[in-house]
Image (tube, rainbow, N blue to C red; front, side, top):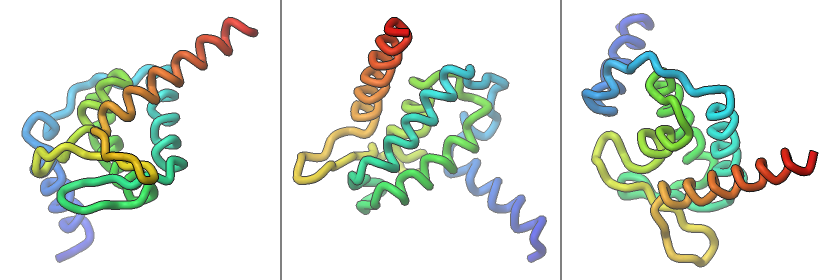
Length: 134
C-alpha cells in the first residue's frame, strides 16, 4: 500500500472510530481564549504525573497527552469552547464509549471530565484574579 493511500485509510479509520458526528466536523473554531485554556489543560495533563485509564488500560501522563492531542487535532474544527474540548475529546473513548479515569498518587480514580472541569475552573479563577491585580 502506498503512503498516500495509507494516510487516507488511517483518516477514514480514525473518523469511524471517533463516530459519525465527528466524521463531518463543523466550521466552529476555538476562540483565542478557549485555545489558551485548552493548551493549559493539555499542559496540566502532561505535568500531572497522574495515571489515565482508557479502554481497559492505565497509561502515564505522556501517553494520555499524546492521545488527547491526536483527538483534539482531529476534532479542533468542531470545538468552539474549552467545555466542548473536555466533553468531546477528554471525557470518554470515542471507540468504546467507556469513560476516561484519572488517578493521582494513591487517590481513588475520578472521571477525567470532572477532573479537567475542576482544573478549568481553577485556571479561570486564577486568571481572573491575575487580571484584576494588574
